[in-house]
Amino acid sequence: MATLYTLVESNKRKTQILMIFLFALILSLGWIFSEIFNSKIILYFSFFLALFQNFLAFWYSDKIVLALTKAKPIEKRDNPRLYRIVENLCITAGLPLPKIYILEEQQPNAFATGRDEKHAAIAVTKGLLEKLEKVELEGVIAHEISHIKNRDILLQSVIIVLVGFIIILTDIFWRMSFWGRREKRKKGGELFSFLGILVIILAPLVAKLIQLAISRKREFLADASGALLTRYPEGLASALEKIAKDQTPMRAASNSTAHLFIANPFKGREKTGWLAKLFMTHPPIEERIRALRQMSI
Image (cartoon, rainbow, N blue to C red; front, side, top):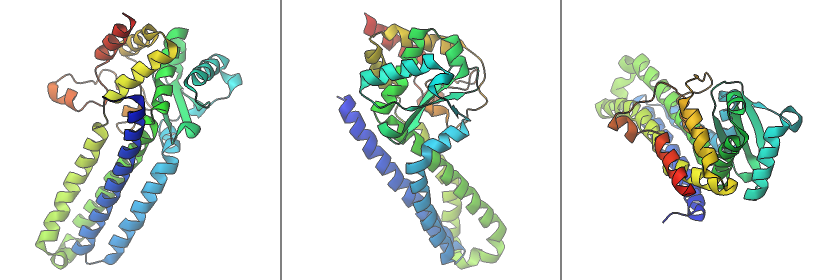
């Protein structure tokens, strides 16, 4: 049975495995296309690119996420109420105070990102601050602090960078293949040409499936951990209800960052079919609310 401690270790291992796997995938892409175009430069380029993207993903994924979502840092004087909530919950959780950011969005939502407990950030939307009561806001912040404590944040942030690199690289190789197919195809042979096209098609799909395969159990566990921090599961349950009912769109969200948020930011575009549910990065919000309210009984 999974516990908070086993989850932390599991997230560390999964992050390492993910980075190694995607390093190997980029190197494989480079090798195949170096054979197709009979150029070792492509292989060397892929090797250094793979090293660079792993370095970037580990050290700077949080900054990339915050830039993508257009989150702005704030000081205590900018929002004392929010700062007090974060400070109190961090003391309870035994964590250092993370950096706090605000998104200029009216949709109530939030996410956490960072490398570890000492390099973490929590971002909340303006709508979350305006539309939730204090106990509801505490529930949401406690959920995000739980992601930091459980070491979910590095894994979630790294995925955004690595998946983005795979998609960009396959697009480059696709254009190279199309541009040089008449001049270079014979040098690589029919087999490598076939492998190249196959990899171009499958690599983005594999990368996307990795992104979608983020365990939804993490959201349930962060809900439960957050409820334990506040000692009031109803606060988060009520917050999730309000978030689910609010249909305000979010401009800052994208497919690459959607899994970071406490709830799906694409309001009105959620699919309910069995296949769609299979690949959802968030569990159904009704199930999360039900689980929280069962904790109160």
